[in-house]
Length: 292
Image (cartoon, rainbow, N blue to C red):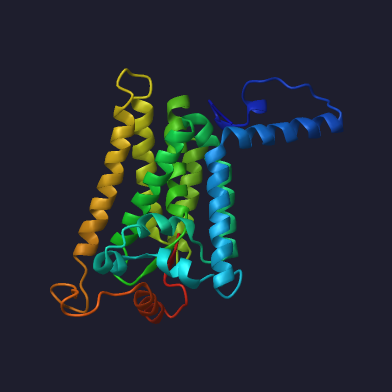
């Protein structure tokens, strides 16, 4: 994919003139080759899709079917603020990105990840792309915690995917000199859906978007300077800031009007299953309130 003056285009439409007539077999061969090359040039995107699908299949097997994933992997990996605060399970900020609440949830997310991730990975390079992806996911988790209670359950890769949209916005601006392109239209459309469809993590999407914009700007700004390390260092700083925001949020939870959350000396720290059960009772669903 190339960033052309009018937006994001495939290489065959960006600056390469094509003959008007091609034999059907030749056309199919060329398209297959391009798909293969795209996959080879975006190995991290393909790997992320594969890992997400694999984790989803595990949760389907442990749960109650394609639209009712669950089990130990789901419960131990979902983003639950109380589990982070009381048990110190900070890994949930990352593991929640690889869990999904149903077939349509993962299908739409993986389609978006492959479509957008392939473009961004080819533009930034694999390692920079992975930095943007995971930092956006962390920022999305922090944003989700900011706008939910201690027992809300949040899962999904959408925070990281919104970060990839933010990355596209910066890359398109660098190439065209304007924000009024296809990336902005895509972001506006998805934000509109975020605000209108129930059970979507608004904080997760907004946090991921901000994280992706800031991370990509830092990488692009210092990519061609002698101090190339500054860009990745700033991205790491964004990740640290995201964890700090999450820490401040969970550290100020109000558990039933108590000034301080319960401690191990007063009660047993909340377990994943306890938090899961509390979240399920509060939301009236098996999975909790928010998907991303």
